[in-house]
Length: 159
Image: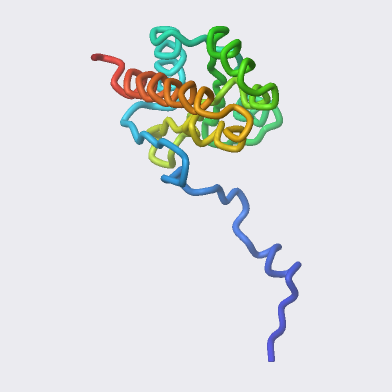
């Protein structure tokens, strides 16, 4: 009888295997596009500012991995918010501000296209509704609308 240890199985696993393309999940909005990764990153940054938010942060492992000689699909997190929302959230719940900025996520698919996704702000702020009440729920709803507008603008940059 042939026996394999777990370590042997791991050693036989394909090297360079990558995760699958991002799919829908509870609390998220996911927009598949025909845009390339770099096109969608640029369109998302432009759409954030065009829709009244500010790019607060950007981070991703793609370039750092390339500097180490590792090729991975494009992957960028773009944090967006604005001071009006920040002040209003803080009036309802100090703890809720740990979630700001709320992030857009641009991921490159195996076929070279890209996906724009984000956790809906109402999902992100849900754990703080006991403290923030209806006012925080209203702000989260406004942010849901703002993030949807950003996403729709980013995935249709020619319109």
